[in-house]
Length: 231
Image (cartoon, rainbow, N blue to C red; front, side):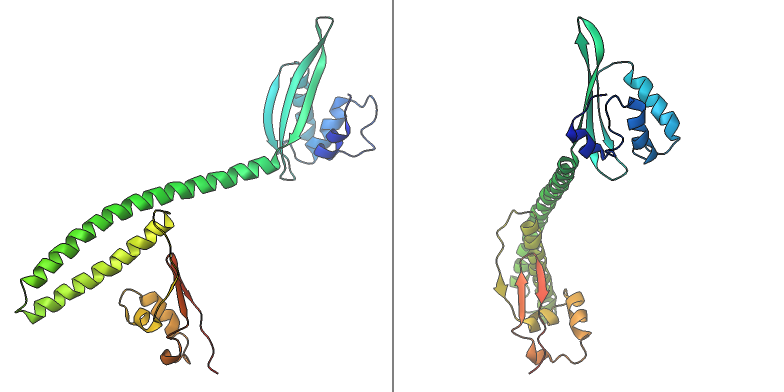
């Protein structure tokens, strides 16, 4: 077996073992005993690997070592005087590349989710437009019915809130521009569709509602609360 310095580093082999004319099976035995070939009897794994190597057939595969590192193994036979004289195997640490591929897959999944959410949001927005349009018509035709007008006003208010949620979804899907604006916390607390936020605020028993009007900053993607203690 002939090797270079990179083989020792990539496979983390003991230097005292890697000497001239070291048998191939002694090298892979170290690898097998530390679990790089998975569960099983190390000696059987050594024998199988040796038999596979002696076939002198081109091979290329990835293996995850017990350390968690991923290696690309490529073996090719080489010839001398027209006959197979041995094989050359390269071990490449591709751990970083595999990690980047996983991150890219996550990003692609999020982008796909964003596209789906954006499409649903657009469809829902169209439905809201119809609801709000008919609510306005109903208001025009119900001027003499105070109770009906109150009900229609609630429909319109809920529709506006729903449109705000659609805007957040579109922002998440990057199909709309985001904008940072200050808002009145009192309005948020009194809104019927912000019960979760209101419950969080009410858990602060000593919180004075008059003190928190100007310390809420919202982003289009969500709400962030900053509660300042009284002076």
